[in-house]
Image 1 (spheres, rainbow, N blue to C red):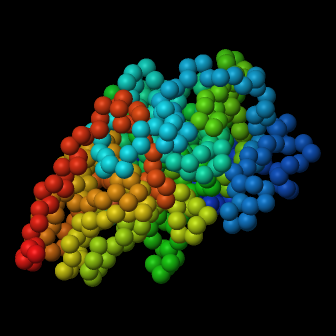
Image 2: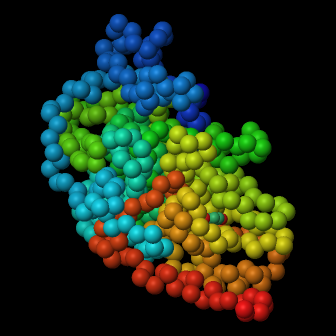
Image 3: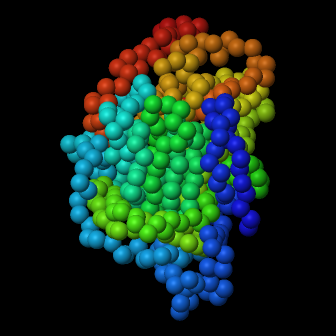
Length: 462
Ligand SMILES: O=C(O)Cc1cc(O)ccc1O
Ligand SMILES: [Fe+2]
């Protein structure tokens, strides 16, 4: 497959320069990429001597025996094997805002079924933090050790990771930038991830995060970390073989490596069952000259999502807006779905067009990348959030209800210039103490959104 250069990038309406990077297109492909032609073995994966005296290393993302359609692994051809490093030690600056133990009675947790909404989140000291040191957990469920559940984190940093890399042994990270373009340097190459793009960096894969273009004081965004399995494209059922997020629009990096004579010391930080460890090495971890396989990071441009909706009546279930799903063992039930509310035409007749009032067995964490969300006119801002936990009643506020009940049902475009998203999970989301108390961003009056929903029925009172 030939790499494609993408010269410009549209983010939050503006066209700005983008690092000249190449990408491989497709989802779940068995890719191959060489920074030096002729490096990949012609036969098999592990020749007796790899080309140019490189070391062959396998990185697996599933058990060797996982079913073929789920099996993921890659082969890396590198200057030194990853094992060439000093011993692990506790990470020198432990981050107290990172939580991975989701038990209702844990001291880090302040769980509630209350409808929650947050003003735009920020992490104190963002100017001095890099990506790793800014990671702050908002909530989650389950357990990374038993490989089930998820964590929802927020990042807010201004410092680049210099001679520092990170990997999570706990899960795959789906990164959703809100402010600031990210440049991810990974073992597989580089990914530019501006707002309105997402990136997925899988378990075990080393990466560094830089803040490029710097059009906001600090970079901010959300992370969905899934402890189980990997993200998949949702089934399309009767929609057919095209639509929603098209496989060809996912972009993976091309091989890139660095090999300076004096590289100084590199620190690699590892999240392992929620705790941070580090090790040092005297060379860059980005020394992969060529790679092949299907366990590869990727990015996706949310503006390419093919939105499908009703053309007759009724408000469709929001599962129709699923970009990626991380399935649980229960058919049709996700550890986490990543769902977006992209600009789209509403044409439904005889229909209350905003979301209906509902009590959902799936928990719904929402964030906003830009613009405003049609179901809530006010109070939900970019970098803010809301959480409607399992079975907690919610829906349009009184104002939205009144407007939509009386609206002229002409075709109408919603969400122009906006992008809201939802992390939807089959589990109760336990919020952290930071999210509820220390952030200082919880909107204490959010419950009042529904207080104006008075009885208006013409039925006689009994
Ligand atoms: O609560 C929300 O705003 C998310 C949502 C949107 C929708 O269109 C239907 C159900 C739902 O939970
Ligand atoms: Fe909802």
